[in-house]
Length: 288
Image (cartoon, rainbow, N blue to C red; front, side, top):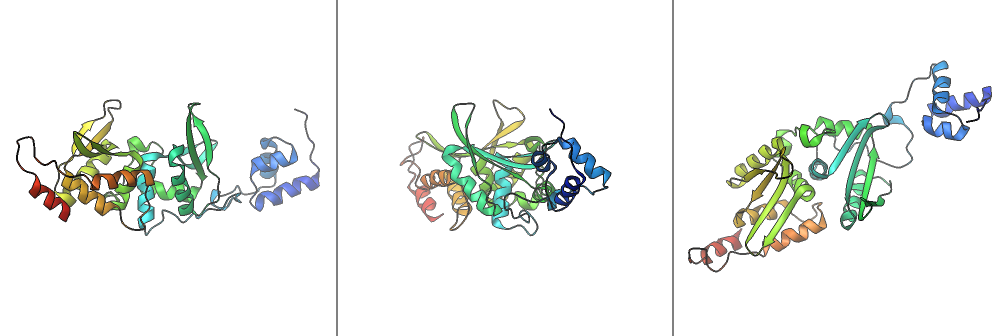
């Protein structure tokens, strides 16, 4: 690469532009030099390096999100990020919060954008070169640190340690189930299942037991032994949980809400396996 000689006037411009919030990579591109050249100019002038919180942004962003006190939307997105998000903090990818979904659920990323008050565009691409997908990546040190303080970590599947008060919140679990849960409505049974880490499965089991007096069935995941499959298979508990989780104006994944509503139409069969009438149980179910 041909070496570019910078004039004293250009060096002073670089220093002033960096102080105003420009990034090193942006300045290197503008002046046609290596990033190391920009760093040497700044070091020689004893310029204090940027705090990531004050770097000039290309896109808008509300960096007070996930800050105490937490609202219902904060709690929902904490749960959803725990299930379907990724946190990166390594060289070249510092303080990144990323959410990727199947293209069919891309409208949910618009809700995430609205929550963060950002105009950053959603990327649409083919996952594994064949499956339509969408993702959004946010770079923010304050939001990243807020999420870490609440228990989310880059290796969240293993290291997540959510606070007890958050783990006993319905908005939080609606987010988790929207991300890694399923609503099953089969001819031979109805259930809600969710994939969790061992530590989070304990929180979920405790939450359902405390609120509904029901013992969740928890078994190791067949494909990932370090993960736990949790099942709720009692129709009355399923109805109560769905009605508690979904309320007017709550943020949720539209596709999952539709599946949940279908479960609310589910009733016990006319008779159980012993031939006994289920009318009384259905009557109780309608009162839930």
